[in-house]
Image (cartoon, rainbow, N blue to C red; front, side, top):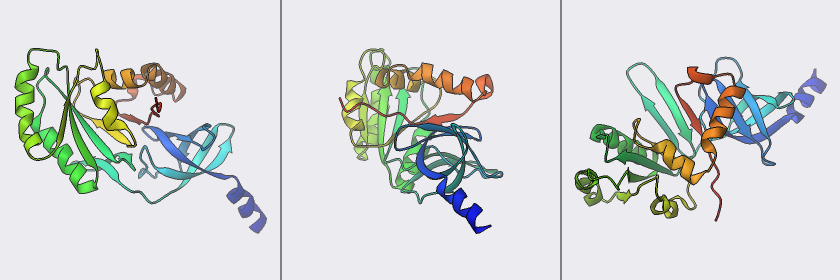
Length: 221
């Protein structure tokens, strides 16, 4: 019925995906309300950072109906499938560390992804207070010579070297496990770890969640 279709259309709202956990998504509306959403059917081409149209299905819940055109898309792929990581990102921050040894192959692949997707790239060397940092910095000189920005920091002490690089950007932190991405996020956004745990519990994902993406707003100060 035409009247029913009109009512369905009126219930739609625009928002941005700020978290993705499997096939569950948190969508933030312009008034900062957050809806727990799913996609219609088995659609899986949705990423954190996407601008979407959502049809409210219940209080605090919704169904993603449409995705707005993306400016950029960060993804990884293998021989079998493509995994979307983040959309509308302007900058990729590749987090490496003095210890454990980082994978230059992964750094290369991230830089290629940034170039291909039209995003800026920055390499952040974490744990720069350790003795092994000198050798790590030396190995990164190759990338600096190519024109890529390299910043050294110790996230447990001070993340200020990274802060100026985050201004006016939508950045994605990527890197292998153990590099200190979570420490950096927790220093930039106090309480971020607690909020991730709360979201995991709310979505009933718990320890079964092995991959997730989360968007945080940084204070202007």
